[in-house]
Image (cartoon, rainbow, N blue to C red):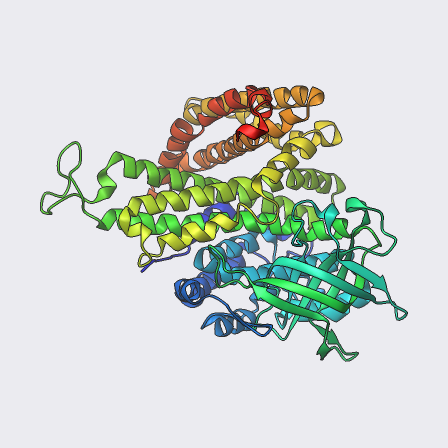
Length: 590
């Protein structure tokens, strides 16, 4: 049976030492969120994750969701777990107190989110999507829409979805066909089909608030003609209670590789009553408020699954005896040594650990900037935060989820054949991790967003929000104690700068060059970002090296610098090779 223990010590290190949580309470609306309160929240979230959600993760995967005559039922235990989650106030965690929320800063709520993803990724999708829908209505809805939907969504009585994909179009939303016809009462009649709708139908809440992309009759073609509508499963009465069923039906659920306890639905909208959110033909603007939040959350899914897979790999490596150490028996009293003594197993475990803790640190930086963006009264600081989060969103989504799958696969490898069978739970983590690289914009699309949109945006200003603090750190920490961390980081930074110049120059003459280089560039960028995190963590840990936690930090930092960060050199070589060899390959030869 798999195990999970929330990594509270490392979470507290990121929250309090790496980013000084005391400054969070200085932001408007965060005055109550002292370090002590945030620690208390993390401890309670750990109990919920370990004791309520984790025990139904494997059984939920085995049972899956069931569909019959338009009704979807979640696996055994999910309804009771959701009620406990809702009753504990966790659905209200990061929402505005105006609508019943707790107003928790993202700096701490993102750590709670990681625990949910580690303990039960499929369960976490239900409240996660609701919060994304909440944000879209919160930022773009009318006051009436906010009052009608948000209190019930914040309380967890109602849930939410985002309905984009159609059978013939996924990433290319300009092709969508769902129609919205104006009605005399100010509403719209919505007709069309949507697929791959996570939490599109289930038995956890009394109502589901769908946010649906559709076209008005006179809408221009392409993405400029898309509007967003709020379409509840049940219409809402004037007193706020649930009314008659709307014209939206679940026609099927998908039988998937992973996240089987999350209902992935095909929905049919047949003259369903909906209401316009934001302005006509500006639906993508509102939807991207939700999608950008979801992309960060999906990145945390990759991190969460990686963490639980790593924990299980470590436990197995300590217990499983097989062969003898290459330098002599380490457990002579046993028939064989535990496999943790073997260099290749240690390589895999340290690789997992270095990536996981680096990603957790980077997500902490992004979360902090999101808090500044939404709460600070300093307009200059808000602009910096807006630029930074826009730049890092595709990196977090793609890099974290790529690594989540790679780490889950490596964790399975530590088990050998035992990882491939169901009993140990490792194969579920590999299956669950795989979807995060696909939905909310595939990782190839994220790479194109980074290279094709974010790098040249505002004359390269967004990139400076990342490079400036990195270069300042290198310049001000050039001493002998930090040399093992600064020298590799400086080399990797040089690779990133050369790669950026190459991509921008080559892409001006041929846009295929951008596409050919984008995935390698994003990985290179992400490695440099993680290198910066490890250098910063090493600086904090060095004066405390006599304590086991900090000693391990320093050793992991050295491993990252010596064994992982040098990948930037090969990535630079690969992306400099250009697009010619792949684009000139004959289509018929594939």
